[in-house]
Structure formats: structure tokens, C-alpha cells
Image 1 (spheres, helix red, strand yellow):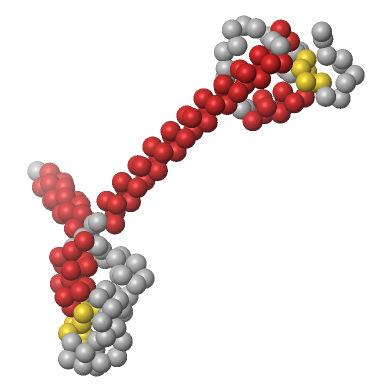
Image 2 (cartoon, helix red, strand yellow):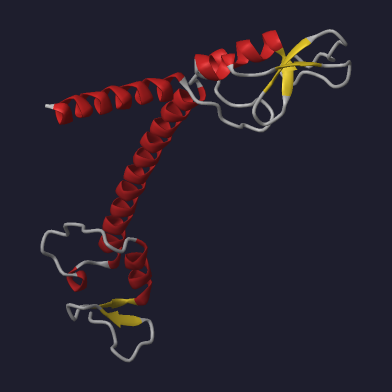
Length: 176
């Protein structure tokens, strides 16, 4: 039985096939996807069969989307962990100025109050920490524990050394 063309719930697709508007909404959900319906037109499918095929299409699409999202999340997590575990460069750590506490404040790493005679190290962002605490922190992180101000990393230094050696190689070639 063919749908009544005057029925407001009937739509015609680009190929001229008529079907109920509810099915049109389902198609919009899966816009851009192709699904092999074995050369059978929508008109030839019963409503039940069409819904079964659309359900299978949506289920497969959702499964693929979930798998892609899980893979992307895993990739981002592993990259994020690598970034978080970059240690500060030795030069950057050696360059941190010493400071005296004077008895005010607390170390954000160990949460102990500063003693009057404690030796502190100040980060470029001006946050100060017990010397031992911040040195231990910077062995596994390259950012301030309070504000996340980044110090150069070992990797940055290695890349700079590689760039410098390439520049030296280039200048040697220019001399020839």
C-alpha cells in the first residue's frame, strides 16, 4: 500500500521515494552514513524491516563512535601523562634563586610551615618552596605546583642542542 501523498506525515526523498516523515527524522540522525539495503527501495521494505535495518545501522554507528572515542581518550591520556612527567631541565633548576622564609607561609609541596632559617627556592613565578621539596618536585614535573608556570624541560634542552648542532653543521657547510 502506497502512502497518501496528501498526508502531512509523508515525505519524498531525493530519489523520489515516499516514506513516512518519522523515517525521515531517523535518516537525519544518521546523515552522511551509507547503509547497504541490498538495492531494495524504502517503499519495498515493510515498516518493521526498515526500522530493524535502521536500528542495526544506528547500533553499529554508535559502537564505532564509542570505540573511536575510547581510542582517542586513551591516546590523550597517554600523551597527557608523558607531558606531565617531563622533568625540568637541570639548568632551569640550578637557576632557581635561593630565598629565606623569615617564618611566614607554608610550602605547597609538603604543606609544612616555613621555618625562619629554612632555605627556599623561588620559581620564576615568585612562588617559593622548601629547597628539598621543589627539587624533588621538579625531578618529575616541570611546572610550578601552585600556578603551573612551566620551566624548560630536559626535552626542550635536548631539542635546542640538536638545533644548535644542525646550525653548526649548516655554518660549516657555508664555510666550504
